[in-house]
Length: 426
Ligand SMILES: [Zn+2]
Image (cartoon, rainbow, N blue to C red; front, top):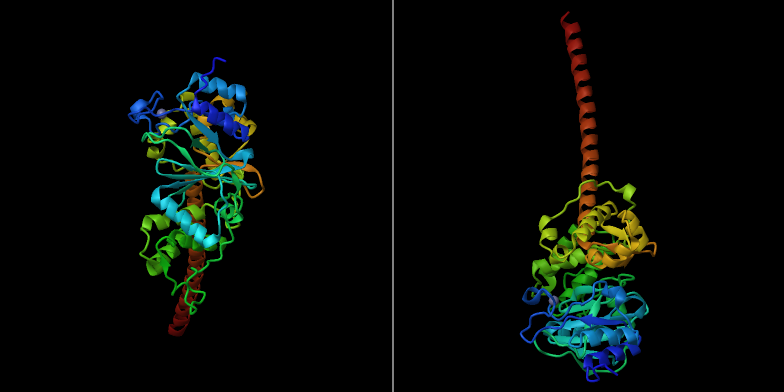
C-alpha cells in the first residue's frame, strides 16, 4: 500500500470511525504555535479549526475517505463531530476552574461513570453519549464548555498550539451520560429549578434566601438555579437581573462580579418560561426597527471572512431572523427559498459559514430552529419595553380621560354656579 503506515493520526481517525464517529482533518499548528492555514500567525484558532469548508456535513466515518484525507494531509490534526445523530457530546473542562467546577457538580449531584477522557493542553475532555439532544454551550459553569450539536472536538493524537499533544487520560469506552449530567447540559428542558438551598445548611432556613450563605464554587450554580426559578415564574431579564444582584450581594461570600451575575440572568432569560422558545410568526412581529450593532458585525472575523455572496446572505438572514424574533427555520429548503437562492447546490456548499453564528434549538412545537442569541435577546427586551410603553400609554390615556371628564364636570359646575350667581344678582 502507498499509505504512510506510520501516520498515528490516520490510525486514530480510523479508530474513531470504527466507534461510529465522524471525523475530519483539522489544520495543525506549526512548531512556533502559528496555524498551518492561510491565516498563519493571524489565525485566531491555530491548530483547532477544520480544514474543509462544510466539515459538518463532509465529516465521515468512511475508511476510504479518511485514508484519502490523512494521506493528503498527513500532518493534520483530527477532529470529531459532536452532537446530532451520533449522540456524542464532550464536556470541556478548561484549566483548574473547569476541573473545580466539575468536581463541585459531581459532589452535588452524584458519580460519573468511567468514560473516555482526554487530556488537553489546559484541562480535560470528557466524552459521553446522550439520548437527548445536547447543544454546544460555552461557560455553562466557570471553565466548563459543552460541545454538542453543531460542535466538534480536536482529538488525540492531535497537537495543540502549545506543542502539547491531546492524549488519552482514561477509559477506552464512551459511557452513557448519567441523568444528572444530561439534566445539567441538555437542551431539551431547563431542569426543574425550584431554588434549592446548599447542602450543609442550618435548620433555621425558611423559604426566603435571607439566611443562606452561598460559598465560592457554588455561587454560579446557585444563582443559575434561582434565575431558572424566576424565569419559570415568567420574570423578564431585568427582573431576574435585579433579584440576582440582591441575592448575590446578600448571600454570596464573596459576591460574584456584577457582570457574571448579569450573564447568568441573560442566559436564563433566553428560555421561554416553559423552558422552550416560542417562534414568533413573522407577520405577528410588532417591532419594525432592527437594532444592529455595527461592531458586532464588522468586528466579527467570521463575518469578515465570508465570501461576498455569503455575507449578503448572512445580512439578509439577519433581517429575516428579526422578523421571527431572532430565529430562523432550520431546514435547508426553507432557508434557500427565503433567500431566493438560485442554486440549492450552491447554498449547500456555502451555507456552513453563513449559519455559523446561529445555534440550533428545538422550539416549543418540537421543530428544529436556528437561533441568533443576541438578536433573540434584543428582540425580547425591545418587545418587553414596547409592551410596557403601550400599557403605560393606556394608563396615561385613561388618566387623561378621567382628568378631562373631571375638568368638564368642574367647568359645568362652575358655569352652573355663575348662572346661579347671575340669577341671584338679577
Ligand atoms: Zn488557522
